[in-house]
Amino acid sequence: DAGITQSPRHKVTETGTPVTLRCHQTENHRYMYWYRQDPGHGLRLIHYSYGVKDTDKGEVSDGYSVSRSKTEDFLLTLESATSSQTSVYFCAISRANFGTGETYGYTFGSGTRLTVV
Amino acid sequence: AQTVTQSQPEMSVQEAETVTLSCTYDTSENNYYLFWYKQPPSRQMILVIRQEAYKQQNATENRFSVNFQKAAKSFSLKISDSQLGDTAMYFCAFKSGSARQLTFGSGTQLTVLP
Image 1 (spheres, rainbow over the protein chains, first blue to last red):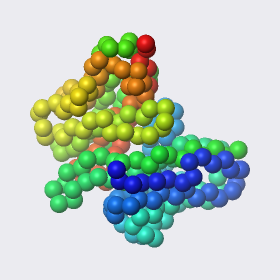
Image 2: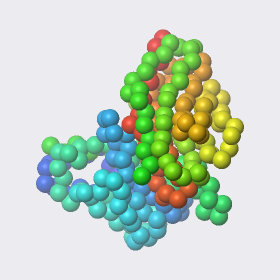
Image 3: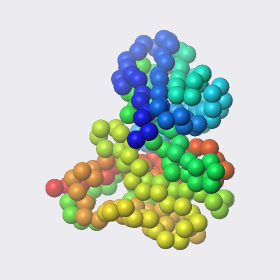
Image 4: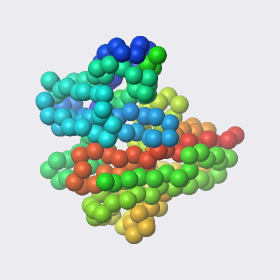
């Protein structure tokens, strides 16, 4: 497996507090992603990164920021958590052959269940 | 923008029987990939099967196979000889050759009944 870990696995926080979720990979993959999973919506992209300090927004990026200072770490920050950000958050890495353009999908972390009360 | 639609929020099947989960997608591109992911109660996302759009042959992985209809933009998953361990949420996903990310459907919760 890719060796991708997320922390924490569960977190309860209060409205208005900042929260940072961490994703760590051990195989030097270039692309990393943060998704949120909500009933009826599947997985929706928050932000992604295509290299150190290179990031871009996804479809549900409002209220979230990301940072990638090292290849292996991709952080997701909720600057001021709201109840609408209660969700399960997944980090993923892309398995692709950039030489041929072939893509093999993602490998996912085990997810973080975040509850904002 | 690409969209992926899974029109069956929930399905059930008897153990040992066959079930088909449907997925449709919308794209104007010709080069793309399609995936089915399984999410059991453990929450882990597991890749079940992958299909390249330029390949006519339907992908198979043991008891899992797909019916890929490119003209109809349909990508259904067939599970044969269903087992209790197949109980999970199943997500269909799409990636065009030009995109940097996967787009997911809303999921189908499959329950295998003993």
